[in-house]
Length: 159
Image: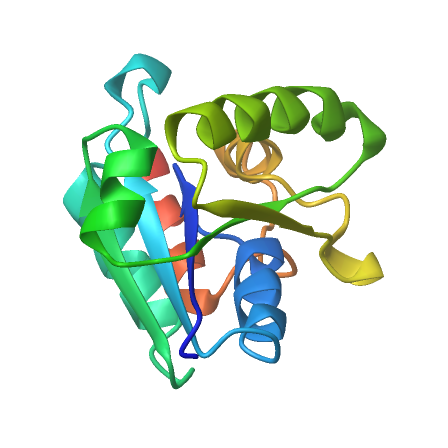
């Protein structure tokens, strides 16, 4: 059976933690679709098109990975992509309660779709897009946390 995992998120911007999780997920799944949510309620720094483009550039060297944007209900996106699994990342215990609630709701909406949680490597455990944006906005160096393409895009946005 060809197992497709869909990894949803805002990815504003994609970090080394995100890409680490995608690359490790490729050891478990046959295909990983990074599904970038429009999510205008979060007022993202980058447009949906920019986030999709950045993720494609960052993950271009990883076979079996594709990147899409979406603005529908997650379960609908999973079905459209013919995925069987929703992949979610957990950085800390504080993420678990919210993620557990989402997984329960997604199970109610799509009982045939499983949610799988993975943790990033220890090196990336503390990296979040919000922290990266804050560091960049205050003139800090984010080279350790994001791909060089993302670093350049952040620098351009912060000018």
